[in-house]
Image (tube, rainbow, N blue to C red; front, side, top):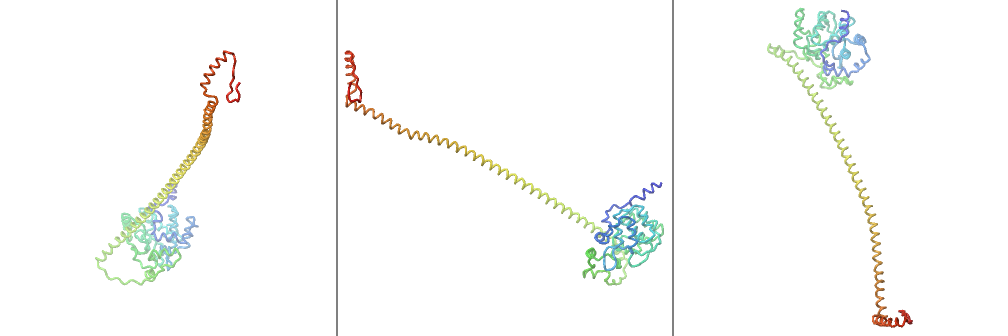
Length: 408
């Protein structure tokens, strides 16, 4: 049995499942995260160190600082510090039963109202519904008991003009039925502000504008413009007294509250959807831009490779043409040499032909001269034949040398 109880104590609190940056209103969350005090809380590492800081620094549990400096309060900065630590069941019981300071207990109840599953709120709050410890939750010094404070946390949708996470209607009905069984009031008492956002005239209201609230994070005096100074609750004149309203007017006002809440929620939902749509559009544009850059890069790379290949082909074709020209030159040189040799032969042949012709022409001229000198050769041959026969008969021989000067 003791092991089972110990395992329950170390378990985390059953939460609603929402991220911690969506638990508080956007303006309040941004101011907390950007405040210098919250950044100093990074040095606090343990649950007990945060409790000591609450005991020393917190004197009210409103969400905004009081006075002219409209930054987030110390209590809500420490509450957000607890959001980041994810408290266990044992640690939460230690907060709710702490006896040193009622503000430690109040921050514990606020943690449950923001973080816990709405179905478990009554289980956590029921032992403290009639708690009679007195304290002042606001900066105006108005005293109340812890039981009344806890009942207002259960029944109210607004907390000092900030918005609580919505509790489902069936859960609210069950809480009201449980309070009726215990014969306790089932209406909001007003110790945590009015039940509507703009119904409170306290000086600790939320800043009149988002810009005035955000200016606190940058060390500016807010409200810092004439329009916001005029609308500031500190300098605002008292409202005129209300005229007596008819029952129909009261019914219209009672119906206007839920409609306003619904319109506020719808407007917030539309803003979230528009923001998501813009973010998706920016991502799509970035993706398209990256794709176009990649396409341009690969296209330029491909074109460069094509240019390189064309340049290589042209250079190789030039080299091949130069080689073919050199071969053709060598062939043409050898051919020209051969032609020149044959031409020289042809040029030298006319001289030889002329000499031949001269030699051929000189033979008839010599023959003609011999004919003139010695007569016709045929006659002489016949005579010689006859003579040779005579000489042969007589056994004598006569030799004639042509061209000579004597006969023998």
